Image (tube, rainbow, N blue to C red; front, side, top):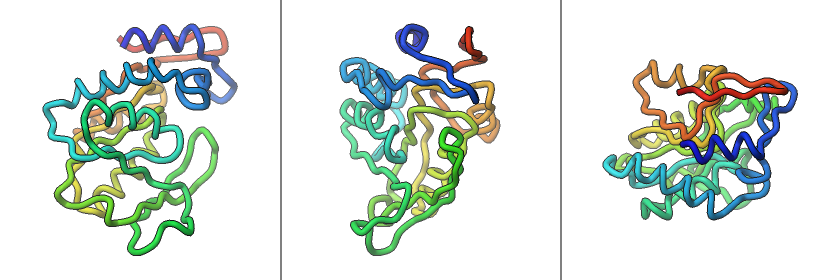
Length: 190
């Protein structure tokens, strides 16, 4: 999606450790009209797939999920990164390693929010090594739900998470794929 690539080039900042900071529009401060454009693009790409729910992980995936859900007319379910007092009953869990934060956590989701009747679209802001998506797959599988694909705003293609999923037959639709990045350059996959 050319508009996202241009936004990354104009507002993004490459930080040490292969971190791309896009907080000015995607995850700390959200450019809401632009986010709705991203959501509409995701909805268009998956309109024929019979999606019944969108699944993401708190917190940065929620805004993009909401934007897509607006156009798809489906609910969003998000896994929490830790258990909390308002999560009760049977829960689904999956271990996840966060590339950005450099830590491990257990994603937690009340079991009654997903069912075997659901056709799930996994949505997240970034895809690097694929750990978060693998955790979401595990949650969907534990519920017996079918994952129809993954929608990502920005994929770091050089970290191979998306390519690894594609090799397994998973449909991954990334709105922008970064092929390489350094402190003074950023190239997109074509």
